[in-house]
Image 1 (cartoon, rainbow, N blue to C red):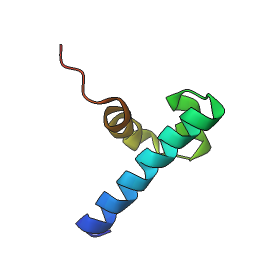
Image 2: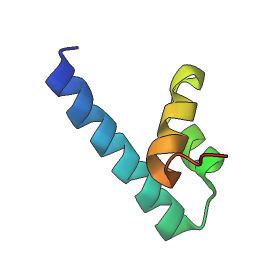
Image 3: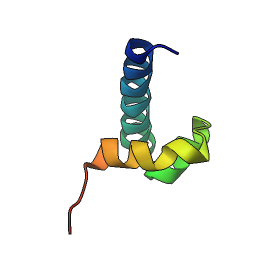
Image 4: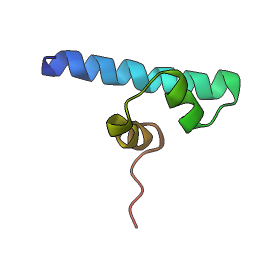
Length: 55
């Protein structure tokens, strides 16, 4: 996938996760499971949805 396609795909997935969380009341894990997000991408989407928390 070219870089622009990946950016568009990631933005759409982030929006889908947020929409599922809002409309169903599911947590992020349930939402990502419903969308079949690969295990290797879950941390990326957690950071995208909630922002990076620095300690």
